[in-house]
Length: 288
Image (cartoon, rainbow, N blue to C red; front, side, top):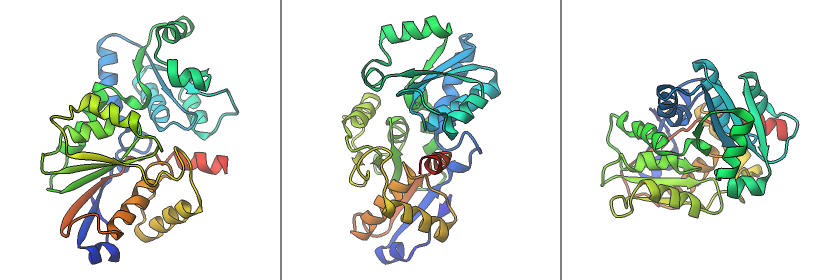
């Protein structure tokens, strides 16, 4: 756990700590292994030798999955959203880990990637496989993310995390105490999918101590501007902690704004989960 010492936080009488899950592993960092661990265990138990999952061409999830599969003796298949292009650093790494690729048209991917027809066609191409949903978002992924809270050995008032598929958020929400709050910072400009995903795992009648913030998505998923780039660069200069531009950078940008506006009561203790995703910085350099 790393405390962030900042004059703004002193002025507003709040304490901010980062749970450094980005340091778990140099490849499978942040929340990635947590969402994969129990899925890989079940795949092995049920006799599968191949893992298939879904993601975009810069997917942190596929990047981690390809490495884990290769290390654990599984074959892997990545179903990629969009048309085939020149391999970027993320997919080049996946290929180096012996991952096979299959590309799906974006409209088909969005609406039919889990359809019986799509899965049947994939099985004809690749044979028998164990499916891990996009972002590791299933009940085993949620189970793995529950360990985020059980590892904490201190009390806190708020715990914050980026929200993509909602898997990590669900694990945290279902593990914190009723007097603690989860705040999810969405990387998307539309939050209904994430909200519904969380409600699917966390019955709203049982878990009401959470909400999502989507004010600082910078125009949508993977959208960035010079203000965000400057903020992330300054954050590293000040605290020597790297942030990616898609998830963690946007979270801290928004969190600083909330604290500046007095969102948190005095003496609040805030924990921020660093979910890793730093391989995405190579993708940014590749694209820009």
